[in-house]
View (tube, rainbow, N blue to C red):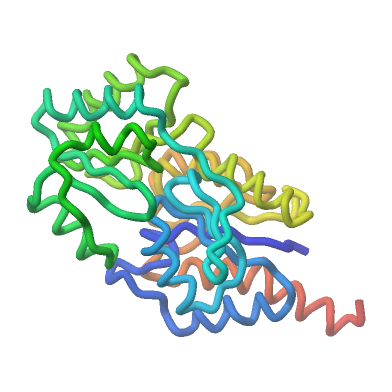
Length: 274
C-alpha cells in the first residue's frame, strides 16, 4: 500500500485551463481519509502553490520552488530551504543581460523583475501572484534567491541552458520546467532530493511513495519515488524512465492514478477483510 503521493501542478494536477476537476478533488480527499499523505511538488513559488493546496484541503508540507523550499501550507513552517548563492545568481543575471533575455527572481516569497514587461505580467496572471519591480536584481542577490527563471522561446533558451551548464556545472540545478521556462536553483534544490527529505521526515520509506509529473523538471521526482509515474502528456524522456504512464492532465490522469494505485487497492483489502 502506498502511503504518500507527490503531485506536480502544471501539466499534471492542473488541466490546461489551470483547474483541478471535481472528481480529482474528491479522490484526493478520499485518499487523505485513508491516511495517505498527499502533497504538491512544484516549481511554482510557495504563495501560488499554497492557494491550490488550501483549496484541496492538503495539510502536508509542500515541495515548492523546484524543491528549494519545503513548507507547510497551513502553518507556514519551513522544513528545508536551499537558496542560490550570490555568485551563481550574479552569473545568471549577467548572462540574461548579455542575451537581452527576461529573467525573474524569487526571494522571501516575492517575485521580482527588473522591468515591467509582457513576460512577467503573463507569468503573474498564469500563477495568480503579484510581482515587484527592482531594477537592481544584484542588490537582492546578496541575500540569496530561491530560484531564478529565464523566460524566452525554446530555441533561445537551448543555448543559454548549455552555456549555464558549462559554466556552472554541478554548482547549480538547471532545468526546463516548460517550453519557455528555464529555472536555476541550488544544486540540492530539485524535486527528488526534496521528496526523499520529506518522506524521511514523515517516516515513510521511498518504496511507499508515488511521484507523478510531466516535464523535465520532474525527472528527479519520478526517479526518487518508489513508483514513478509520467502523465500521458509528459515529455518522452520522462515516459521512458517512469514505471507507469497515466492519462493526460486533460483526461484526469491524476484521478486515474489515485483510483488505480491508492483507492481501489484499499477497497479491495477492506472487502477481503485484510
